[in-house]
Length: 536
Image (cartoon, rainbow, N blue to C red; front, side, top):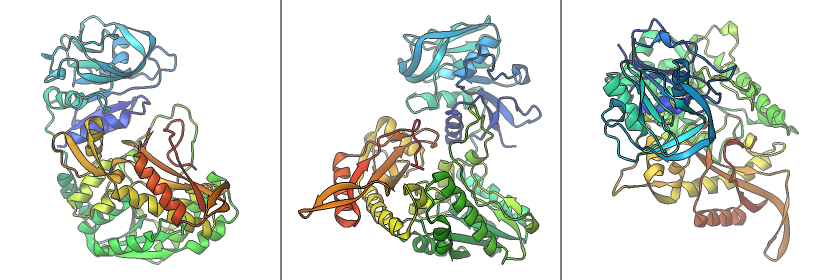
């Protein structure tokens, strides 16, 4: 039986990070809303209560019945989770004198406690809370503090319950992975038997049994998820799989031809559809970002459906849906930031069943599976790319001329990122390695390209803005472009990438000299939040 750690979500943006750290420890875990603990699942070996933007003493605070698992399996509370345990069992949680946010160092660590086995004195951790535990419940004791937080970590005297007020899941907590490893291995008795190779073997067997001799349709985007899903399905059912790749006219330079060639080399049965005329016609004159997305989503489904109906004996629709897409997230605000589109949407009369071979994987795990399947590295390490393509990177209406300008500028930028090498160490090196970038640590450093260092990069054409320039002693009045590059682990939050000045100078010079219609290059230094990664 596959062992499992349950992570109960109270609305924190770092909940998925906890799950990703456990997966990196070859341990299967599942994120569930705080009120949906599976009482009848014998595979569960431990529970983690995650963080929350709320305070435990708020009237609307999320609450869980601890008796569902208390005394039955080990429990670890993180930040809000720790405060909830303390508050519920008779301790005291109060507003901190000032918000405790950022790096801190643990003092008085009880390294005899199994949670802190192997910890260094003064180990750095990351704090992010406005409340603090001022008194522990009876039957509990502190096992670590900081200069400002007396009860930074605690344990129960006679039952397997622990709590930490810092975030071991973030990279700034230097030994955070060790803490989670101690919880999984030493405390919960985890076998650590979750791996890419095992996932492939298990999933291929399940797909063969699930699909049998049926035909399957899969919509390809050229991205990592759908490509890995296609190769995994191809290994299981071969020519029973038909892939459809739609060109909406807003892909990157030469992308349609390049991706089709890659897919053919992988032995996939792919139908390529050039539908750029339809998309361009329907987008003519549209400037509202949300309307652009909806038009593209609608047209994509229409084009995909038209091709899918030609495969009359298909019984399954496969998608590259990954685990973060399926997590039932807690919506604290209830507000929609922007809409997205997916392949889905096939008419009900087609009676297609859904097949999602990557449904339990995070992005970095998808990449590890891709490598295990022998896929080319440039497909595996490809940055996330928006479904609407360059349409949401052109501010204003969409025309073929604008797309061509942006494609040229973006091609210079992306090729430059791939060619420029940097050496990384410390937290940055650990973050890049954890994302699945293939690099070897030597003398505490790794060497990677700028492309591999950043999570996502792209160029934005400010087509509704024109600026004055001088080229060849002549006055120009043309459009600026903005370069965007961010570092992240899950795209929930992102920081702007601190790209080298000499790189930015060269790329700016190359774009202005080589791309007609652009006379100014800017670099976006905003983080998410408050900004989003894409501009539209």
